[in-house]
Length: 635
Image 1: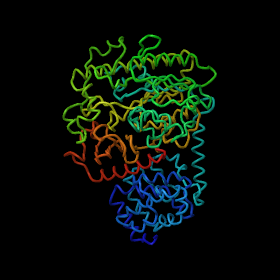
Image 2 (image 1 turned 180 degrees about the horizontal axis):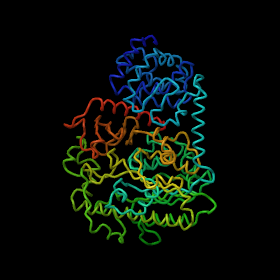
Image 3 (image 1 turned 90 degrees about the vertical axis):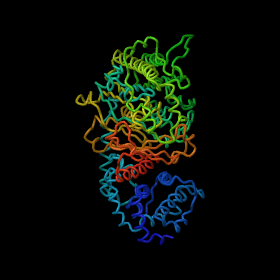
Image 4 (image 1 turned 120 degrees about the horizontal axis):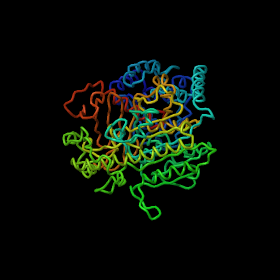
């Protein structure tokens, strides 16, 4: 069977993968999972989840046995698929048993003609970050996170240079310890808004009044390329709590409780870790997840959960949801134990619409109605019939985003009414931010508190003829992030950052500010590095990321709702290009975002010109990062 992998066949596999760009990541992932040192010394990875994750390369659900490799030579692809399926999907026994029973043949297959691996140097330009020597000790993590490469090294390999690896780890640990001492642990206030796109921020759009958040940006840092990895409320909020992509935490549907020890060790996530480490923890407002008592008592000391309507009855009175957010936040601060550090999440429902309310989806407080009264808000550049007509063929009147657009933004008058009410609600949120900050100042803890303002997802407000979120358009995935950190050097206060920060970064960032080491399963990284150690951050920070939206199988979206309703979509997002893949209809899009900031010209489905090199590069990098991120690896 192994003889089927002759030098000729192996060469065909190599050049087949190089010539067919979508196949490149298959071998790329396998090579990453098994270092040459580990293979040479007969060592197999201890992390069997890595092997399970390889199934994502094929998105198959068969249980082929390894014997099928004898038939797998066509274009080299079947060989890779069969190997993956045999190891990760065999139903004959556990994954670990399959691996151990077949370790010899797996080693020999991967070891065959190892010298040919040099051909993969041509992949360097395709896969973004250069891998100086993929099979050597100085390999660079493709996610640009050098400081965590030791997490991926094969610990069982005797040939790894212990001095180099140890030095790297020691340097990393020293950096972590130096960031936060016990005396420097910060109080934490997270202002977490809802459906808030980048332009609903006064610091970036003079049509909006958010003076308190703007002051946070003047005293801190505004992150202009902050993005969510999934643009929908409940999924993104679970990403906040777990530091994981949705494919990993698998909380894909409303009221799903997977994160409670089914896919995630809940007590090792953000809020329980803060509480266990002595923080007085609270959340007021929108939770959007189940509340099993046995877990919630170990998560929050104060928990006030409510959302869904802009007006609610409390004590026989009609109260606005944002007003309640402010009342409960201030009560938490006033009544908290003064001898403990605290963490407060003010989780707003604004500016989320009341989805079932067609006539008045946005309902601000009466006293806010004078705001923006004499202002005409410009409509988005892409809010035209022409831009709607450019949408893919499966976007029609049945699309939920189009249906909500009709009720909110279809005419000039309708747009002005709805967008002004939304902006009024944003200014109301800003007022709560200001009230909380004033309370912190009164208590003398303003300079000992980390302040973060961000949101769960963006919002289309007529762009491309759509409303709402879900899709990887700029207005949907790019969301405000403002961090005001007492540790921040004055030289960077008031500046804007242009790096890709992600929703998976929030949990590690907050934990580090509390002096807590984030669990290794968390996929994000501490954003404080961008202002505490910017030189190192520039060298190691991510240059692109994978985006996902599906409620079906995370790998292939099987089981997602109808393609015409809210279609599933994956994307690779970079600063130069964006690549979309709509799996239910197998439809691709490519945008040269560097020259087409409003995503008007789909290079693959219009008369616009592109180069095959750009498409091949984006397809290959997308396929790799999709598997990498959905397998739970750090990004």
